[in-house]
Image 1 (cartoon, rainbow, N blue to C red):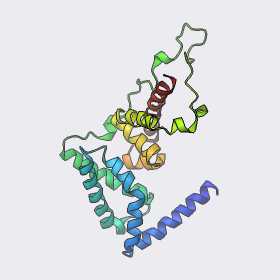
Image 2: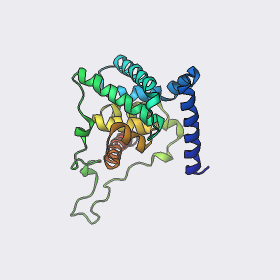
Image 3: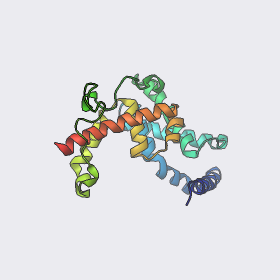
Image 4: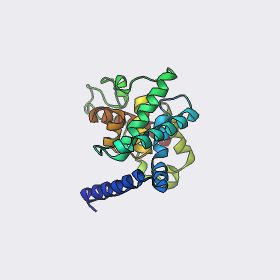
Length: 215
């Protein structure tokens, strides 16, 4: 199926779901919660102090969704609209906890290297800019190694240590499966900013995996 056809089918399914929601179909709302709750909880967790508070934020956001269904105009996807409500709710709650900083103020520093410069050959080298030692080829590793609990622990630990903007973007893109457009609209960041944050986050995770596999 082509991408255009897939998008068309998704839009049709969303329209049908929206009609059911506006008609008060409880099962439709249950389907919506099952589909989006994990992503909402993961995003909320980045703005507030604990999982318990994040769960409260998600519940409050769902109330906002239900109360705003009649005003939803379809200018964005239903998922994006829900995430915008969630982010705004989480920011408000985070502000009350005096822990939040506007996401736009956390734009990436243009001078921060995605990978440490010591990993590359210097200007006086016959091959300046090339890797000093190439990263290990993880695709050649057995599936068992990639799926090992220890490896997963390295990834999770690395993501937890990332700067908040990078951690949030990689969580939404690579763990929760959001598209770049959904991330940009939900977080109100530019495509370029989102791309840089994701690249730097992925680079740090790759570097951590490289050290883990190569010893």
